[in-house]
Length: 444
Ligand SMILES: Cc1ncc(COP(=O)(O)O)c(C=O)c1O
Image (tube, rainbow, N blue to C red; front, side):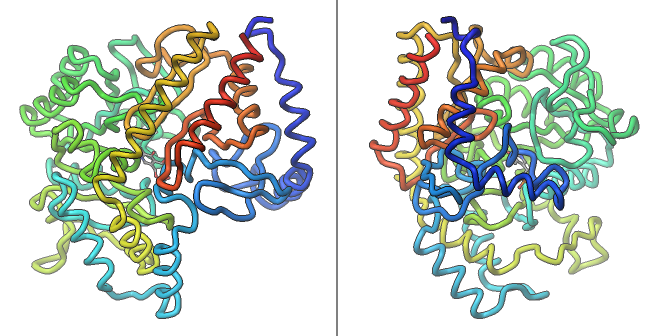
């Protein structure tokens, strides 16, 4: 049977059979939550499973199923679930107080740690999400340059604010001259007009488009390894060209390192040795609790300073830098030695290589992408190198693959992406490869 013709019904029936409590909870949830939950990535057809608890690299659902967590709450749980030091730090802080309207020492300690590690971050501000971190970086770039427009990469995901909800899951224009396309309802024409779109890893096109808008361009925003496309890394020459274009045009370069901070202690900017003016952060720096941050050059971040005069950017937030998050972040980041990153990256490379070799040996048309501890699986016969080449995949095969992994004790992101966490050992990787082989055998 061809991969395309293979039905997903058997996986669906198995999933439904083993998850009746989750099914009932999702039916009830739809009566009170719009769409049954509060987060797009939490949903997949026919219904998501409801988690009861996590431990190390495993999660347990309300039907008693155990699954290896290869998603790690969208890459944020780099130490897996319930890391003892993180749990203790959070419990001890809860006993002292969960939130104050005042600065606390852990806020300063976490900022000290991050500024020491991330080359482009001299000063930073904490937020409650990566979305807010990106919003703040865009505002800071506009404040600093006095210009209005931002450029982003086609297919780049940067959270859910208006200006970055453009050309994420939609496209317009030619491949080498993409036009801004709303990827959500509710995006106004004015917002669209302020967003310039560049194709990924296309130096000539990016240079041409950025030069055309140089007088209006406050910032170029890029995720150095595109998570939404299965963590395809930027070509070093592409990042260097963006850096040069920004320098030449008095435009700020923003790296969205909400996920890529996982690549090295200093993030993707250290990996590629290209230093942005502003860096958006999130995920791992909160140790599993809600977090985000915007950091960068001291002269740009000066806009937030209220000590000398009214700040250029009045940035508030009831829960910004709340001590629970700061303690969890500190307890996490202090355990992340260079050796931890090296091992995660080594495991990631080994896993990607094995998945690819095995797919080739079974002649199944899939593509494996990724870098460092990240990976993505694409059900297509042509190489996936950017947003447009990632389109037109075999949707039925993707759904089958996702449920196959769930039915065999592995949870991936519903875009069929994954990442390695520190509690994972070779045994977990071997299990993953075995499940992959069963899938390939079933669809070859
Ligand atoms: C690259 C990137 N930027 C921004 C965000 C938004 O972060 P948050 O979900 O914390 O708002 C995400 C979230 O997945 C992300 O992957």
